[in-house]
Image 1 (cartoon, rainbow, N blue to C red):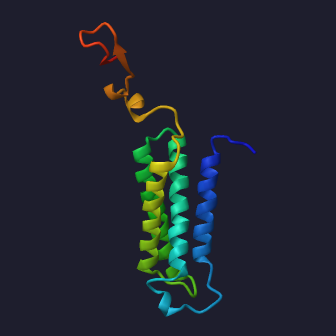
Image 2: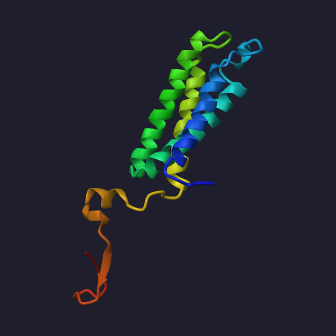
Length: 155
């Protein structure tokens, strides 16, 4: 299987297609009012947008975007897709825009970005500081010749 540069975006497209497609298909059964605030659909929104957020953050990081920016943009992007999909449901028979769905999707997006930021390995090899030329990105070495033997100095 190819691991080319388009692979992360293919995952984003596949997950987004499943989420949007699944949300816009007419329901074959009646809506259940008891699921308005809590129900299996909320869990699906949370898990789906968790996965989308992780995939978007991976794809952005592979493009060279910094980790913090990738995580933030992943939340914004996946939440925007969830909100837009919810609004489009107004035009689908048997579907309705529910704020609880948007809330579950947003929570999933945030949790996905936090998971990605904390536990996913770094995709790109250069740090934000190296790309921007920040002084903090310069390697630190020990200077054996300094008066305080072993003092830290920047190169």
